[in-house]
Structure formats: C-alpha cells, structure tokens
Figure 1 (cartoon, rainbow, N blue to C red):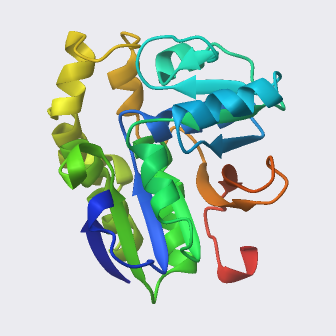
Figure 2: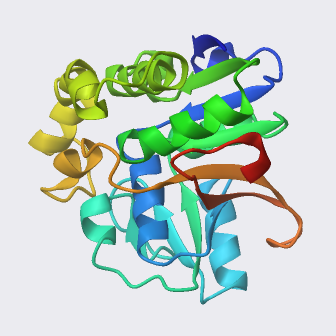
Length: 243
C-alpha cells in the first residue's frame, strides 16, 4: 500500500482510496454519534444546506461547529454529544474541515472518515481493501498542516502497512503526544474555539474506543442524493470475503 498525505486544497485528482482525517473534532463526534445510536450521518455542504435539511426533516439532528445557533440541535463536541440518545436517528453534520474534506473526495472508490477513536478498525479495513492501492490521507485541518490530523493519518498508515504484532497502545504513544500538543488541542483547552466541552480533548485522544470504521458513500435515499456516513463493523481478522 502506497500512501500520500494531502490537504484539501491539494486534491487535484480523484483518489482511488481516501481516508479523511479530522481528529478535533468532526470524526470523533461522528463516531460518538454512531455509538449513541445514530443510523447515518448526512454530510451537509454548507450551514444553509444543513438548516434546509433540518427544516425538511425536523426529526433529524443537526450539528455544526462553533457556538449554538438557531436551526441546530447541538454543536460539534464529543463531550456534549455523548449524553444524547440518537437511537435510529439521522444526523446532519457540517463542520469547517472534516465534512468539507469528505465531500472533496466523494468520487473516490472508497472513502473512510477517521480519527483516533476508530484508528485500528480503519487500519484493518485498509489492510483488507486497499493493500495494493495508493491511499490518500486527507489532512483536513489548517490547510493540511494540522498536526493532530497528520499524526493520526500516519499512525493509521503504520497500523495498516507495518507488522502489527507490537501493541497498538505502545505504537500510538508518539502520535497521540503530537496530537495532544497540537494547536487545535491548545485552542480547545483554552477556550479559543467556541462550543467546547471540557472533556473534548481527552475524548479526541482516546485510542480505538470504537470497533467500527466509518464509510462515506453516495446515498440516493438521503434526501435526493447525499454523501452519507455509516459505521462498518470490522472483524478482528477481516478478509476481502467479509466486505
């Protein structure tokens, strides 16, 4: 498996396989939404698009970055989302970087959305599905320079391509440290960013909390065609016959 790491603006061609990484916080939040029972996450193209979807589907749960706003049920915070019951619900998510990155590679043959909380499941799926492909890791934050996203991407690539006999927790230490010392972690911890729970950074740094990967694909049933994220339970010994 060949790997490359690009920011959103550097995506000049459609990748074969794309892993879109947003650690703080879009795809940590998405994982928590599935853990709290959400059926699917519709990725909105803009705030107005998200509001329009919510207006048409009042039972859907709309999430955005930043402070609370009319038309949205909650904000892009894992600490806030973890107490919500989303059983069977559809979530609409619009964020500054993560959802933008996923929509930018919507034509790829396989699109995974990832963060540390689903790292191992994502790596297992890549080993089974993309062992002979070029995998493009989309580093969504800070124009492709977000240290927490790059660290997570490199860690997933390591787990997907190297001997994994070493324990994940041991291998992850330097990558989690980089994420913990990132600009995004500092801004969340110090209140520079709005719509933050005190537990957001620790929750974003939890390794392999959830056993599923997250696959984004075009969904013709989600309001006349939408890029939609769903969880995919990855067996520990996944093979191509499982897919």
